Length: 482
Ligand code: SAM
Image: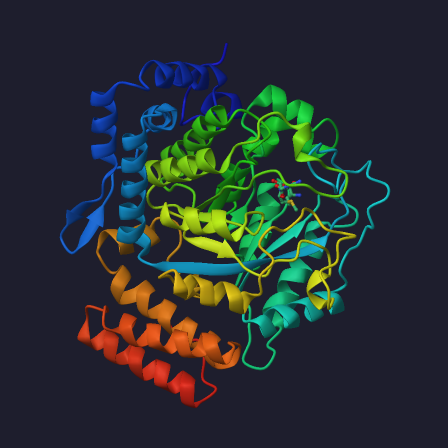
C-alpha cells in the first residue's frame, strides 16, 4: 500500500487513492456537521490585509466536506463566498481566448475522444504552416489575442518540432492591428527537454487535463497508446515545471468518474504543486464530456447536472482562490452565465474545435473534437459579458512582464490589481472596440470604459490609462500595458 505524501514526485503518492477514499468518507460523515461547515466557510473568506486581500484557501478534506454538504443555505453561502473571492482577486474582468486545433492525428485510444486511433471515418487533418497563418489571421480578425493550441498525440505527425514551428508561425503573424500575444499549449504529456523547448518558444500556460484521477478508470479509459501510462501523465506537471514552465493548467473531464473523487484528486494535485514547486496551478479547467463524432456522453455513467457542476466550480474557487478558472464553449450561454458568478475568470469565445475551422465560412463538423454549445460570435460574447456586468479582457500583460507563477499572487495580495489588471483590461478592450467591434458593442464598450476608469485608485495610473485609450482611439498605436 502506498502512503499519501503531497511532496512526493510519485503519482500514486501525491494522488493517493487511500487518502481520497478517506477524504470522501470524512466528507460524508461531516456533510451535516453545521459547526464544521461554518468554520470551513469562514476560513475560505477573503480577509483584508493592508491595501489588498488574502485568502487561506481550503485543504482537499475541507473542500470535500463543502462539496458533500447538501444544506441549501450553506450551498448558497458557498456561492456568495465564491463570488466574494472572485471579485477580490479578479474583479469583474473576464479574459477571453480561443482554441486553435493544429492536428487531429492521434495514436491514443481514449474512449471519450473522437480523435482516438481506431476512429477510421473521421477525416484526419494537420495544418501546414500556411494554413496556421490563415487560421491565425481569421482569429486576429475576430479580435483574439490569446490562443490555446490543441493537438492529438502522434510522434510522427505532430512531433514537438511541428508544435514549435506552429508557435513561431502564430507569434509571427501581424495582420492589420492584430497579433497573438499569448499562446497556451494543450498537448500530450512529454519530456522535461520538450517542456524546456516549449518554454523557450515563449508559451504562456501549459495545459494538460488529467481526465480522471481514478487510476483504475484511467487505465480503462485509455486502453492503448502512450497516454495509457497513468504515472507519466499524472507527473507531467512536475516535468513541465522542471522544464521551467511556471504556469500550468489542470483539469478533469467531468462525467468520466464520480465527481467527488475527481474533485478531491484535483485539489490534491494543486496542493502537490504548491508543496513541491511553491506555486499552485495557474488555471483549472472544468470540461464536461460532450457528444462528438462517434462518442455519446451517455456511454459514461457519471454525468453531472448543471447544479452540481456549479457547486463544483464554487468549491474549487474556495479551495484555490488564486487560481484562474476556465469554462469553454462546451457549455451553453446559460451555464456559462451561472458559472461566471461563482468564480470563472476566463472563457473561450467563438471557438471552432475542428482542424482548420476558422477559415471555413460555415462551422465544419468533419474533423471536430466535440460539439460546441455556445456558438455565438466573439462580438456577441463580448457584448453579453458587458451586459452582465463583466469587463471583457484581452490582456496578456502578466507573463509578458514576467509576472508568472507566484509573482501574480503578490499582485493580488498587495492590492495592485485595480492599478494594474484593471487598466490593462480596459486598454485591451479599447483595442477590441476600435479594431473589431460592431457599432452597438463599441457604444456599450466605451460607456463601460468611462465608468470603469473611475475605479482605478491611483490618479497617475488613471491618467496614463486614459491617455493610452485616447491614443488607441486616434491612432494605430497598440499594446499598451502596465
Ligand atoms: N492530446 C492532448 C492530450 O493527450 O492531453 C490534449 C488535447 S485534446 C485536443 C484536449 C482535451 O479535450 C482533452 O484533454 C479532453 O479532456 C477533451 N476532450 C476529449 N474528448 C472530449 C469530448 N468528447 N467532450 C469534451 N471534451 C473532450
